[in-house]
Length: 495
Ligand code: HEM
Image (cartoon, rainbow, N blue to C red; front, side, top):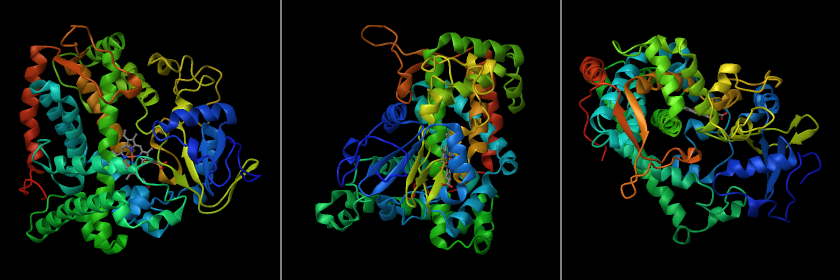
């Protein structure tokens, strides 16, 4: 470890900390190291440097204030094989990323997102309807919701079902892609570049990457072709991809970037939103008293004679606290997405060298005893006491409500769309349903939910009254007029 680097665990010659680098739940080990080595510590992986930040002030200094040098992404060879580094989320800092980011801002800014509220509302009614009709498949319904909103906004394609639409295809290819992103899928080719030359016949992971590339391109470019065809045929429906195609020269997009632009937005927004909503459900199932309190508040403000409206959320302080607590307790991206430096950068007494990878450990902050009382307990009440849920004497000058969306120039461009999806559905779901633990078929006992893994669980979803069930069915019929605009006549799948 170079002298100016932040401290960290002892290193081995040549390998550095490679052998102790975790391959799953990395944030847990990072949080343990933060306790031993501090809120800014470093790891050596071969010749390269990894820096982990676990304090809001250091994050602000490093990723916001010094954003000009800390806003790149680490080079990821597997991603080069799959998308040739054309996707916004993985792309290194530079003019191409800036153009993609400008387009992402044009589609996802707070002002632009106001236009999508009708789509999100209609989809949220469909989600309630689906949960009413087929409650057992709730994770599929939630995933469909998140994907269909983005398919509608970007490509003008509403997907009424999970199966037999582009969503199934997108889901399959994303699941494959997620596997290759996991540490340990490929040898450490980023850190030991010589390993990139292993011939394909001895490197099955290279063949898998190629197959994913083919599958992804087929889907992404079919979507682009469809959009172009509709424009040629005079059947535009105002989706964002039409305006990107119109302004292709202004964004300096070639056809590759056109295809991967929409893909990057889909990939950034689908899993994240759906994982949050699943965690939300998991948290209320595991905490019936909290669920009941949020429902009592909703009943008081909204009642049972009408469905929730977007503006209701601001009158529901306990539900707001619950939404924040789910973000704190089950962060969708506990380590955000790693940044990388494009020049040496001095942070306090340390120098982070050019080419370092920087992780922002949101999980460690969220579970820090210095900031939160009983951080390992799920309790929205903390956010009723203070804006950031912290203990009374904590200096919160560097805390932000959108910390969960990352930091600096790479902060999530989809945060407004995501927040609307979250607030609309949080209100709807608790207004409409009781969420109960599933029962073990053999013992009849209620199954426990592990909130540290709240993506994979069963639960029972029961409408709170026959009156509300009727209202959902009626609203679903009304929502169809919004869907019609996006009910494109498209082939059932891209294949
Ligand atoms: C609960 C929902 C979401 C969470 C927690 C989330 C979180 C994040 C985080 C932590 C990052 C990395 C920020 C950084 O590097 O500092 C990110 C990037 C990104 N997100 Fe989100 N996100 C969510 C929803 C969305 C949605 C709905 C969209 C699009 C519709 C989206 C699109 C993107 C894109 C395109 C990037 C890459 C930005 C870049 O590298 O410049 N996200 N998100």
